[in-house]
Figure (cartoon, rainbow, N blue to C red):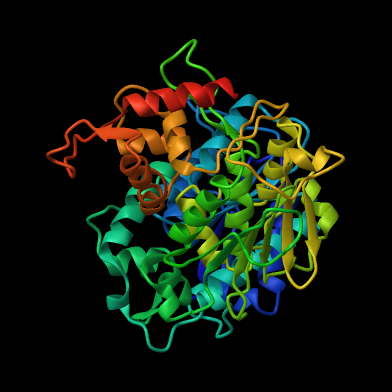
Length: 501
């Protein structure tokens, strides 16, 4: 039995592309064996309304392909186009949705809104001409056939692990994932759905066997299966690698937790400013390199690295830069120059990338490097560099990279011309951010930290031991209502630090 593919678009905009795509499915040596395309031009005349016919065809399809461009199309009495109706039906029926967006200088406003809606649900690819569209459709088709077990060849993250079973996944992690994915991307499943149903929906379970990606995402210690699936973080005083290394950490856990830990490690080593409280009691923290740029570089490494390699992801913090190196490489379709302009995404680990997309760790496919360029430019930093040498390396430049002389020494607090101060004592950073009574989550949010264990051990406990802060409910340290406030010593230190900004 073949898989029905419903090809949808505004009727007048992609008529030629729809026909060519249908012909491609029917004539390609591989695709013709598994897929049966449907386009509305081939529907014979009948007494049913066109809308009912098309929606009925969507319902019995396995794959929905949406081609979007300039025009939103004709609208019904509710102001909704047939294309959006068809997409909504595909979503309602939990059908595979492959979205391809034509790169065009202008679009109808409603088409822009429609695309924004889709981006919250599923990933999408851009195309410039039919050849690029055909290539993208072929890739999606092959990936789908691999995930469904119709093609035996599998990538690492799609391969079944010979020893693992569903019992090796953590139910709490899966429930948390579903909650986040529902909020971020309208994930169709619920927290009450079975583990097996969620894993199958994510293409992480076949024949009751787990894929490698399932272990990376839903096992609390995937390093027992993949020892090198870690992130090694090192901090150096100067601009080159020198021993002894002042600080070194190796983070494991799920792909989410290790990425969070690595980002928090970097943030703890770079300068920051906490602004003022002139307009609000809330103080926004600004790091010398935007957190989002650092997170993009590290998440990119997690999604694209070669997990068959024995080398871990390496994150190095120098006086003038941050380097993120992974054992992956650029796909053949991309060059380093392509990273500076809009481009399609070709993830080395597509199932893993889908999981990161659903949680919002990847905002949109193919935009990570563009976001890094944009974020660093907004903060007037030297343009980031990307290189391929024994792996793929991203270099983010610190403000000091613009200085003629970079010193290899570091002090506890340094005031610089951009208003950032370098506070290496992390409990002092907490003091700088604290205002009135605040709970743990509020403090972490201000400092843009995500890893709770790292925050407690590196920021909160040292500040309590130094008597810079105190609990509001000291006799119940684990109370859910627990908050923290500055002591007299802490208030004096905060004033001292604020003067240096």
